[in-house]
Length: 613
Image 1: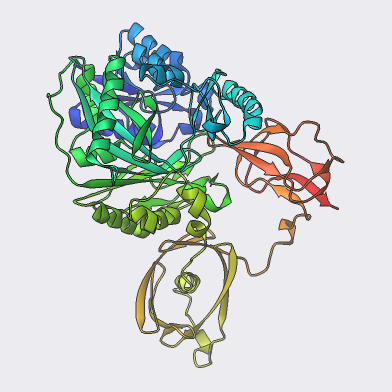
Image 2: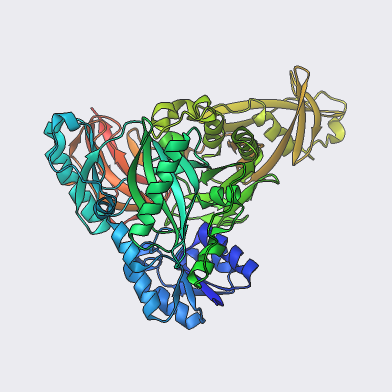
């Protein structure tokens, strides 16, 4: 029996595993980097061990330090979560060699499925060794790793050699393995996967399908179970291939087999030998705890012959601190409040007052809704996200709500090109026009003291706010009976709640203020000073850091005085596991260059200046 588990991970997944451990009476040990010293997962565990450093390479990717931490804390098992070392066969062996129980598949199964080429061989799928015009378009893909690195779509045969070379270089840099392969490219396919769970006694469960087609940068955004619109024969084919993949490597534990579905056919992609981020939708539909079942399998227990029956539909949305309208740029800062209405499952690694840093993935939480039907689950989740309190940095919350209500998604006609087609309309500003007035009235609450001038008419008060990239000016007055504004009836106003009536419709506005940042229901505003700060002006052509991060490289040969072209890449920033390209805003000359590789920058830092010609 397992008594104490160290989770070799951080954030949301560590907190989620700890929750199951508490329900089972299992002790918990966290590991944390210096950047995560005050993180929620380190606070809620029974014990926590520091991993010196801040970057993943120094901390959560150091298997040797994590094994030492488990031994020092008295843990007898290690759960890897997902990401980091979860699919590292060497780490799994090191855990076992230390006398600890590995909560995952055998190292041999991890190794067999770690290479996409080896996985396809096990499934009887041969790569394209010789590409002809008839094979186009094709996909060049790294054999190791994921997340879109080392991946290229080739539509012209003349481009193949160059794209192969580029993919090899990127794969070698990202994963330490330059092996790539070529396969047919499935246009506008759906990303469908099957959850499997296997024990060490020969039983393999296929726990339904999931659709994960809504993706940005090859990272999933919205997932659901079961995948809608699949025929019975296609579903059976998916189950058969998934179980065959698991049996081919003597799998044990939880895993996911991924496919692209197009034209009624399932094309095998890969097998993820770990728990998936989207596992809660399967848990909701089957009424199970996959983490608890992982523990049972690791302890040697046998599964029932048949899996439990599915019921209803579940949808999950990933809430990210990012700006979808600005290249999905990650955001940082203080998360003042995060809360969703009752009836929604919220898996998160943050709590009110926590800081969102630059070192790790910008996912704040996963919100999950379960209902008897797909339409009801979608409606429940969209409504909950719309009413959720998300106070802090910019997030993708509005994008999620609009995506869930988009006709392609509600009709089940989405595919992996959804955001390529619809991102502009999904990110177009649509703020509440009365939000700035509500913010101003809440701010004015308690200031209506007229003194000796009580009997004189009040002059209009003016407040300015930035909202959805535009400046808004509002005017209101103090009267004998309270606050007033032209064209709107002020029913109630205090520091936290404003009720306004316009055109006969009364609406409530909940207001929260944190410095100059104001949240009015789901709308975020920034209070502007009455007079602009003259020191905040920058020369035309100034390139400012759009986020805090690290300058990872500067374009080769770039120095002050260099001629540049509009759109030319000048330097690259790294933040939250993503690399962001900074380009020249116009054709001209680089007159100033402050950025140097390795430099830590904050939002708004001056990186360079391009003088336009």
